[in-house]
Length: 308
Image 1 (cartoon, rainbow, N blue to C red):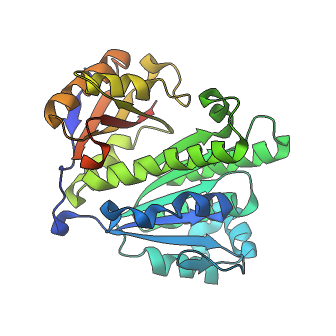
Image 2 (tube, one colour):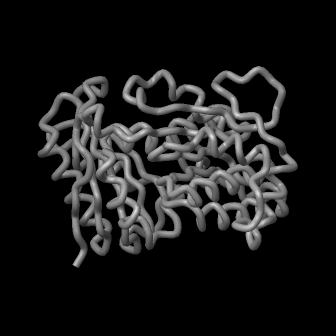
């Protein structure tokens, strides 16, 4: 029988807050994490850009060698036997003592694919809870780029505790007339949601339970939505479940969700939201957290990651 369990707390005590790091890998990853530092709820998070460009970075920068990343990407079978490269040592020095590591990137390009694979493997090697959030190429892009993206995604999936996957093509379902630059702004804001919402409630004690809960899932898809009115929790869940990245809802077996309450009655809103999710995904085991955020006013927000 499907279970529903709660994780986290509405306001995480400083002693129980995990040490969190977000790596924005390549151009796409950099664009997504650039504004994270403006969110005061992420005060426990360190953010870095990861790349080999000599341009002036907007965040603390981990400069790595493209050749090192390429070699690491192709060394799966002998990885445990080889000495880490200089670039891998740089990454290891930064991520050590981290409890939760977010890896944010676009698949298909060399840096995003090679470096994300390497970072996920280093996180797995050091037993860090890793959450990889990756954007996939448009269906109309070059077939070789799409094949490369799928290959890289498979490697990242193997090493990550959570892989959240976002197809660029699904952006067109949100608004087919949206200019491309605006579409990517929307994508970036959506990918940032799991970072902001899950980080706000999770405690150090939750990490082993979340690892076990997500262990059987190969890939997660995102839904996010807002609700207003008397049944705002219900409306927020319905909005989230209409996400273009979600597929046949009744097939999902695992759901991670955070309900964010503004000025309303948080517990009631959360129960309404969970009942709506359960009705759409009856087979799913659910782990959920609750947070308060007065900045969203009289609304409720639901962010969920659903996996099979």
